[in-house]
Length: 159
Image (tube, rainbow, N blue to C red; front, side, top):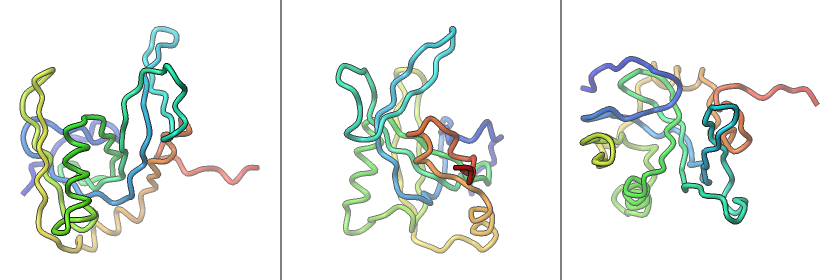
């Protein structure tokens, strides 16, 4: 059983130890750079193939996930190459494939520059009806990150 955690925003941030989640969307892929404006740092994201030359940015994948620790839909933005490699390995594995069909345990060890992550796939099963209902009632579109918008705000119909 996953220990409960306090929700600290809409983004999944693995804590030290085991963090269980279920990927519930396809990946949004791109690059993220950090810029400083008026004394504050903010992310600027670019879709794959659209990053300007000379911009120092990290490759990322972003997913909507069900975070078992907070019992909420969150966005998981992955920039750590070791985690991306592990995800790619699971996706291309004939035994595992798409992580929307099984839980992932993200194991975080260490802090700061000594932080390490491991992914452990769980058994395949259907999510319970109450979880599916919460997922269905929560708007979350990681593609909005590429537009500089919140993934949790539904676009307006104004044209």
